[in-house]
Image 1: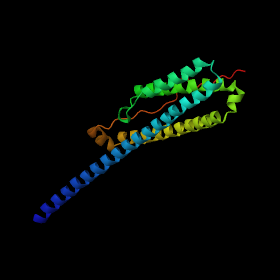
Image 2: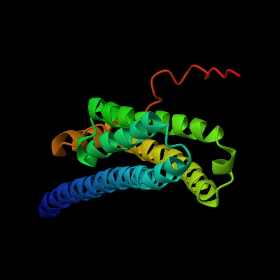
Image 3: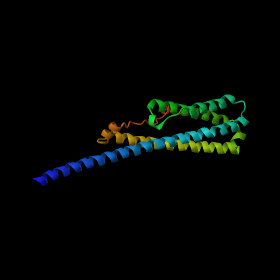
Amino acid sequence: MNFKKHLGWIIAGAVVLLLVVWCVTGYNGLVSMDEKVSNNWANVETQYQRRADLIPNLVNTVKGYAAHESSTLENVVKARSEATQVKLDADNLTPEKLAQYQKAQGNISTALGRLLMVAENYPQLKANENFINLQEQLESTENRITVARRDFNNSAKEYNVAIRRFPKNILAGLFGFEKKSYFEAAEGAEKAPEVKF
C-alpha cells in the first residue's frame, strides 16, 4: 500500500517536472524568436541608415553638375531628413507605425529616383567616377534593404506562428508575447510604372 502511495507521488512529481521543463523551454524559445525579430529589425534600420548616409554625397556630386536642379536636390535632402526622424522600436512595431516608417522610406526612394533621372540629363555626370561609385553603392544598399526586410518578415512570421500555435499560445498569453507586424508592399506597388519617352 505504501509503495502505491509513493508511486503516485513520483508520477505526480514527474508530471509537474515535465510541465516546468516545457514551460521553461517554451518561454526561452519564444524569447529567442522575439530577439531574432528585434535583431532583424535592427538590420533593416542599419541598411536604411546606410542609404541615408550615402545621400549627402550623392546630392553633393550631382549639385556640382546640376546646380539649377535645386528643387530636386532639396526634395532629396528633405525626404532624408524626414525619414531619419521616424524612429521605431522593435518591441513596438504596430502596423500604423510601420506604415509611417515605410512611407518615409518610400519618399526617399521617390526623391532618389527623381535625382537619378536628373543625372541622366548630364552625360559628364554619368561618367564621373564618384557618381558611378555612389550609384553602385546605392543600388547595392537597395538590394541589402530588400534582403533585410525579407529576413525581418520571415522571422516575424516564424515568431507569429509560434505564439499562435497550441500549446505555446498559452505561454505567449501568460507572458505577454504579442504579434509582430510585417513590412508590406508600398501603396500603389501593384501597378507597373509608366515609362514615357
